[in-house]
Length: 591
Image 1 (tube, rainbow, N blue to C red):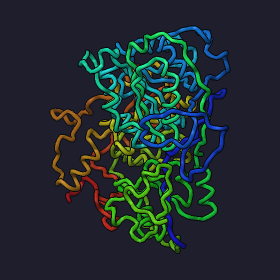
Image 2: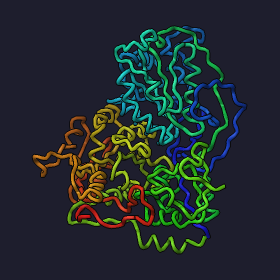
Image 3: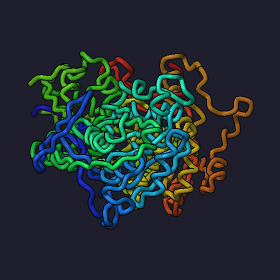
């Protein structure tokens, strides 16, 4: 029998449903085998300059818990400000939560938000925190996230999140204030041409020059963000357009063919065929990691047996993948024996990196699993970071929503937490944006208020958006933070150990004048925001410490001190092939 590795992506074509009487159910998600879903006859739609041709889905997000008379604050023919039209347009798309940080050019929008009885603003403490939170909301719920920022530096602070959402196919709508139309291009105070800045990192963007265009543009933005291959759309609204008074013309809501989330179809397909599944980093959860046919993650830090399966296969079914370099390594050596069948909702991905072609391995794979299990070593009372994640998985029964920053902790969370469902795993895959974990957990907690949400973070990533602890406290979000603190930029240190003779080049994050003391004291950040926190340094104390974190109502920070010598293994060096896989060693030895 031919070995086949399927790698589903968790963000392909979430189906977009009209407003209903409750929030989106917790993890229905994503992808794989694209199936069509016929709705009512499509409405006409005017779209310009779209980077990817829309083919599916409708545009609506979550909805209020009870039906109210629609938008009672204005009579149908009553004139209102452009900012109020914008907010009502969001309401009509079913939006109930936004992540908005105010400024001079967006003041009118925030004033209009205070007049909405349907939309709650979760105030971030930095615009990057807001866009990452919107991503977390979208990734965890399947509904588009919405963030709002002012002009100039407020708008440019969204850039990393927009690029991240584009690479990972996450549907978000970003709204920015802009200087008045007459001042555009004059180098006015806090003016940046954000449409030009973000053109290559969004699916589409708009500069609103007429207040009468707001209803259409908002409707199109949500459609584009969620249709075909999802992604970010930006709407830039000059302040004088926000202040213009008009009577809005609301067109009939669009209902267009959609592409179904296909996790269940993938599971059924595997059940019928017995084909093993290797998941990409972004695909974790689309197929249950604990299933006997799961080979877990493939790629640079994937399991030996997943990479073995792809290397030895004679046919590779690639569902919703982009053959990223962290998966393929040396491209010409990747799946070199296999005929490749590539299925993707985005035609641009077909043949972009790996050219597709339009058995008997079960025993070998079982041998590989026995020979190369995911494992780690324990040194005295030190806490292995892999063990911390393993214990968290056991205590939550694999049911928590997990967000991460970027680095070693991210890879260990991918390896040692056993995801059961789509939309449990929130991570910055394509862009690798440090600082993603904490605000993404905020978005997930807003979208799924009854779920266990844990940010598994590293000290380097965590401190990049540590200010969002204030948001967590003010909103009383039950976000748990398990900080794997090794006082270093761990993944860079691993590369220094392996390829640069352990020469430390600015990767130590502690206080060089007092290396025996943990610095900075993360507990003080939590204390400053009124969040309970604790530190654990001994392996024997870890389980009880994690249980206390989970049992404590509301937010909690657990500072887990781990050795900086640990390496993420297995590892296929950048540009290498399966034959180059590294399975042993750490920073305690020289290379």
